[in-house]
Length: 241
Image (cartoon, rainbow, N blue to C red; front, side):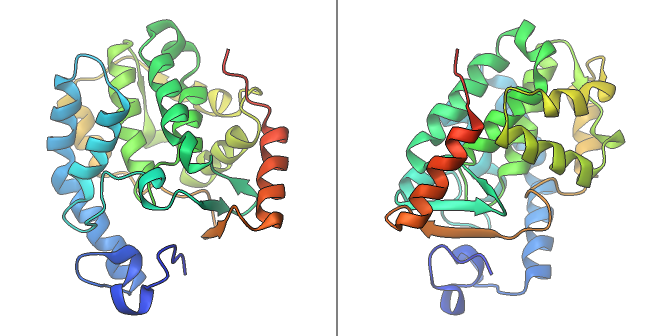
C-alpha cells in the first residue's frame, strides 16, 4: 500500500477526508469527483490567457479537494525529502516538480512544438509528477487544453491504457527517443470543441499510474535510493535545450 504519510491505519489512503482504506471505494470516489468537477476545471483552463504552474496546481485542487485536503499542493510542499518510485521509474526530485512542469507548459504553449511533440510535452508533465495522486487526470486536462490552442486534438477514445502507460514509462526513462510521440501519432486529429471533449473524457478509463507497479516512497537520505535516483537521471539524459 502506498503510504507516504505513514498513517494509513488512522487516516486512510493519503489522508482522505473520510479516512477511507478500501481501494475500490477510493477509486470510485476519485472518478466520481473527476466527472463532477471536470466542467469547472476545463472552464478554469479556458479562461487562463497563459497556463502556468500555479494553474496546473489549481486544476488538481478543483478536481480533488472534495476528497484530499492536500489537493493542489505539490510534493515539494508535502514531502520534500522523499522519492516517489514506480517500478524502475523514478519521478523527478520534489524540488524539480515545478521546473519539469513549467518546461512542459512553455513548450506546450508554443503551437509548433505542441503539434510536433505532444508526447514529449506529456512526458515532462508525467516526470514532474507533482501530486501524490491524480497526476494522470490533471495532466490530461491541461494537455487537452494546450492541444486545443494548437489547433489539434488527441483522440484518447482510440488509445488503450496499457500500451499508453508503457509508452509513457519509456518516455520518462528516455525522453529524447520520441516514444510517446510515436505512440500518439495515429491518434492526432483536428481540434474538437471543448464541450464535445468534456463529454468524451468523462467516459475514459483512468490514465493515472504507470502500469502494474504500485508507487513506492523512500528517503533520498538513503544512500541506495540516492544512488538509484542518480543512475536513473544519467540514463534519462534529459536535455532542456
